[in-house]
Image (cartoon, rainbow over all chains, first blue to last red; front, top):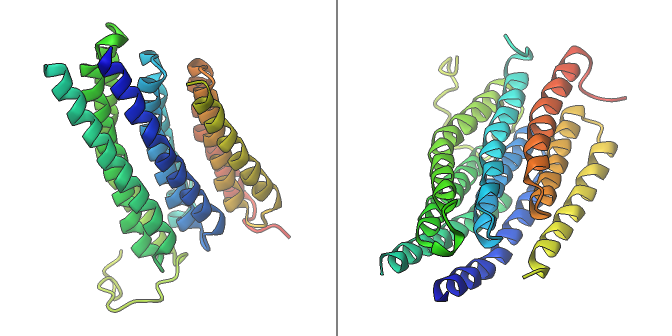
Length: 94
Length: 121
Length: 83
């Protein structure tokens, strides 16, 4: 029971740093001068949000919710590849 | 006793990951150019996402109050970290190559361009 | 313990409001696609924090994966900048 209090208090103390990082990534998305800057910021935002979801599933005591992080990683990578293919060849799927 | 060791190691890894995450965010906001922001973004993706996922899997192995589904959490978190360690570099490389070849991003503060004379494609 | 998920959901909701306004007002349609992806990511976090992981598991592929793919294809077929 002591271990539970330790894990919960430590993870709760780490949450404001995560939220501050997300706000800074969002500021770069809003003010980024070109398209690749914005795509890079969305990329990092999605990856760190997946890690945050894994941490939150420990904190909320529901271990089956961890699958959303895996799905978010895969689809944010797919979004990155779409925009890269548009910028490089101006041709989708070929 | 082994649970306490696992939880302490996992919480240390999660704290290191939060530090890398904040450093990556500040670097992405402060650096002057796209090709230098790429460095900060990759540091934020690898140090800020892969390391906390492995730390979360260690914490879940040590936390006995979650019951038997904690092994599912540990395995899924470790698999996510391993997959992200492959995918983050691939995505960053794709977007950097597209930005260089299409001339979308400015390369203004530059010292030397090794790809300038036909090396890019 | 109850105040942490609600405050995270509130911050994600404010971020989605900003992203939606910029996506509607933007002249560059590719930037509008990127802002739409930010809004989808914030909504996925809201669904996750409100303990609905099944809805988040369906919402993420539809709104982060398929909708930007179709919209980028559409922007490629027509023009990138709006008049």
